Image (cartoon, rainbow, N blue to C red; front, side, top):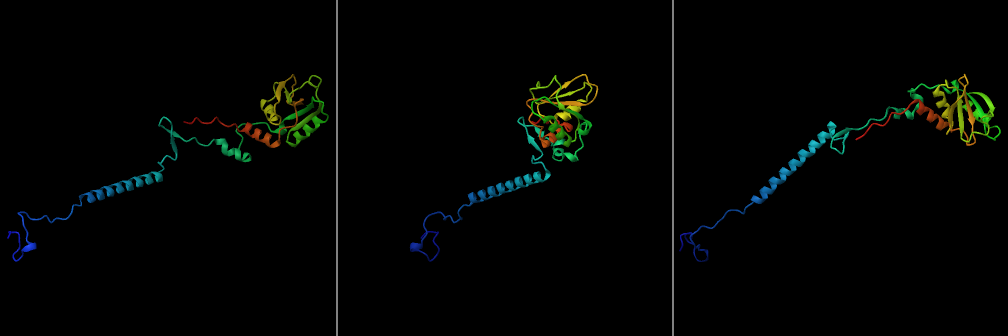
Length: 220
């Protein structure tokens, strides 16, 4: 009987050999390593998410700036000062002082074969606030000799802004001067004239004339 066989045991319960059997539990090292790695990865993701959330609340996530092609921060251009004012022209103070329509005396002359045209245009200009002087057929120098929309004729001393204000009422007009001394302006209607600019379009053009928009800021 072997020395490894307990007393009283034999037969099929007899232990043979010169070494003790190994009785330790199976290895779990791989499971432990995977568990540790998973915990570390989860902690890293949690920290990264917390950092991003903090940046959002601090305003550092890039909402106020954007990256240019060269990799440099470029400030987002601010809205133009006149953009908000354009929505409510009545509430804005004009940036450029212009003469009021009532301060401009307009003589309306018809250089076309259409009868009654000068009177109709003069009446409409009165409704739009202009002071209308003489109304009738054009002088011989211009009668049937104006192929375009019309001519604005005034003195060399006439305020250029007055020409511009009256020009908002008529598309395609040209400006000329003569030897007159007064500040009145002749509106000579030509063959291409159909009608005055719509009042809404003329008012908008007049507003932009009084509130010129600055050139757009250069963006990255």
